[in-house]
Amino acid sequence: MKSLGIDIGSRTIKVAVINNGNVTISRKSENSFNTLEVCKKLLEGLDYDAITSTGYGRHLFAEHYKCNTISEIKAFAVGAAHILPSCRTVLDIGGQDTKAIALDGKGNFTKFEMNDKCAAGTGRFLEIMAMTLRYTLEEFGNEALKSNTATNISSMCTVFAESEVVSMLAKGNDRQSVAKGIHQSVVNRTISLLNRVGINNDILFAGGVAYNKCIVNILEEQLNKKVFINDDPQIIGALGAAIYGTY
Image (cartoon, rainbow, N blue to C red; front, side):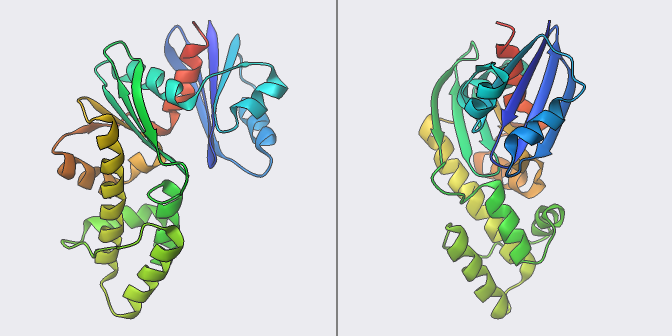
């Protein structure tokens, strides 16, 4: 059975097709003002027997494609457990929210927390901070890793933090040190969220921010634990939705 899962996030839409439990196709594209058009292009040429949607736009998608839906939390739990059966904690830092999910030994979520009221500490926050420091997003984490010091960032509000960073640069603060401080502040906020669900091994890190080596480095140092990141950390939700479609 070919089952397709589509994770319609605020920033990126991801698709995964599985056949007999194995991912055969995965695709992703930036979301736009026309979510359904982006979805249509991602689905072009794909062959599937069942389709399940998750993410912010799952209900909009289901209205047009008459498919089943699954919550993001459930989708990430199912996807993470499939990739890493020993997973007990899932961390997902996406474009505009952060999720911390506790799993039991059967891959069911037992508790979750989200910071979905504010973009602070998310991928969008990092994008804005990178632009403020005149780095590309790819350069941002790598340059931050080069600094042995982290300038303290007192505000996590995106608007106030941007003003704070501009002021620091005007005062002559080292750009790499400021970048390291921004990454440190994101990790501090993330660990606070993880503590609310309990931090148990093994930990799977999902979402686009998992590509940021500085975030991963600081997170592992702070936790004193290794975190698992699969080859495509953005696909976890879509994979979970696809697996759910086979039940």
